[in-house]
Image (cartoon, one colour):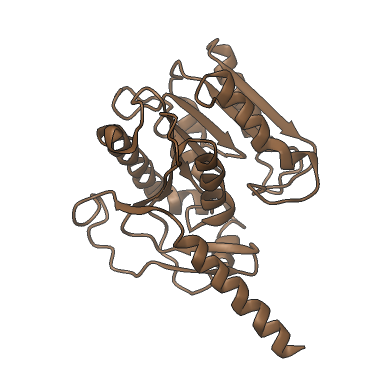
Length: 293
């Protein structure tokens, strides 16, 4: 049994490595050190997290885009920001798996590896869960990194628009989707954003928990898709409702899918629940606004 367990573990790790190497291109977002974190000297790493039951990336200091190109680009681009509490990135379930689905439909997908809190151990998921026992302390600890991650997303949007011809992208069809902490990252390019060069044309927030400070900012006139589960273990469902209400009050296009069950971090995970179909609803939404044929 021990040998079988080892074989299964090795197979899972090999599959994860293959998935991480399956992108068409890797692009560094900055020349040299990323602005604001020039003194960061720790090493980026990745591993399978038994706690999260998925592959995670941690200690990101050098932001990158993993590019997934469709065979026949339809002109739409989507930047994907995985979640992970600003300490890890759920790189497969909330990144690569989403990118592959989008690319299969003709959308050029970019998975954003944004800057994270420094993990001092090789068990970043455990560190994160310990830190979340006091939400206020964790928020203060992550506040500076949240701003840097937001800048990484803005740099990603600018890169995609500047290189639109290279990828067959229409500069008026550049969107963002974020999961959990990644939802906060993408909302930093949306709420209160006055720079048209880094404002996406559409956005999607999955079980996000933006701060009150961020929620107080102005709403832009772009369509927003929201999805979450009522039984979210982090109790963030009301945040999605508040985000929906904010768009609704501004009379801008918004759509909310709140599932009874699914928990936090459902992403592309199969649970044999209605929440598994959130991605199909997202496709319907993209089709409605002509970002998907």
